[in-house]
Image (cartoon, rainbow, N blue to C red; front, side, top):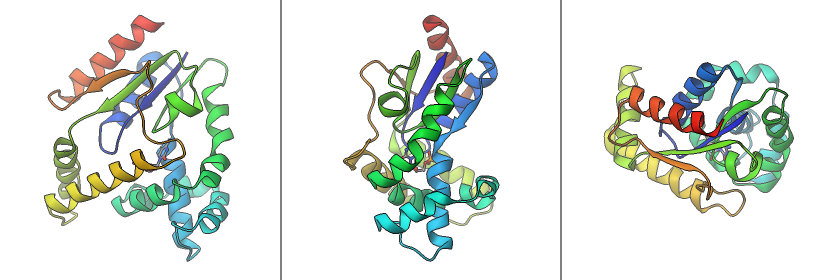
Amino acid sequence: MIIAVDGPTASGKGTIAKALAAHFGLPVLDTGLLYRAVGYQTQLNHGDPDNAADALAACDFPASLLDDPALRFESTGSLASRASVHPQVRAALLQRQVDFANQPGGAVLDGRDIGTVIAPHADAKLFVTASPEERARRRHAEMLARGVDVSFDAVLADVHARDARDTGRADAPLLRAADAMLLDNSDMDRDAAIAAAIAFVEERR
Ligand code: C5P
C-alpha cells in the first residue's frame, strides 16, 4: 500500500505521515528533507539557491547531511523552497522518491507533489492543510519552545511566502490531487487529525 501525504508548510503532514507509517507498519520518507539538504548544501557551497546550476550541484549532498539538525531550521526551509523551484533539482531527486514509494510492501511519503507526480497511483492520498494563521501560530509556538526569539508576524509572513512559492512554481506545484482526501485540521487537535487520517486510509485498503 502506498500512502501519499501532501500539504503546505506547518500543516501537520509530517506528524500525520509518521503516525500512518506506525499504524500500518510502513516505512516513511519525509521528502522535504531531501529539498532541505539541497538548499543547505547550496549554502555550504557558497552558492545561490535561486540559481539552477548552483542548486543542481548541491543535489550531490553527502548522505550524512540528512542527519544534520540544521536541516530543521526555519531558514533551511526557505532555502529548500527556493532550490526546489528548479525543474533540474526536482528531476535529480525524482528517482530516489519513486523507488522509495514503489518498494515491495509499500510506503508512506510526505511532501508537496507525492500524489500528483511521485506516486500518482498511490492507494490513498491525503491533502493536509490548515489556515495560514493557524499554521503560523503552531510554528511560532514551536519556535518559542525551542528558544528562538521571533515574532508571530515574521512567522506568518514566512508561511505566506512559502505558500506562494510552493503553489506558484511551474514545475510540480503544491496542488491537491483530484482524488486526495482534504484534511483541514484548523479546528482539530493532533489526535483527531491522526484518527481521521487513519480512518480514511482504512477505507482504501
Ligand atoms: O516539507 P518541508 O517544509 O520540509 O519542505 C521544505 C521545502 O521543500 C518546501 O517549502 C518545498 O518548497 C520543498 N518541497 C518540495 N517538494 C516536496 C517536498 C518539499 O518542493 N515533495
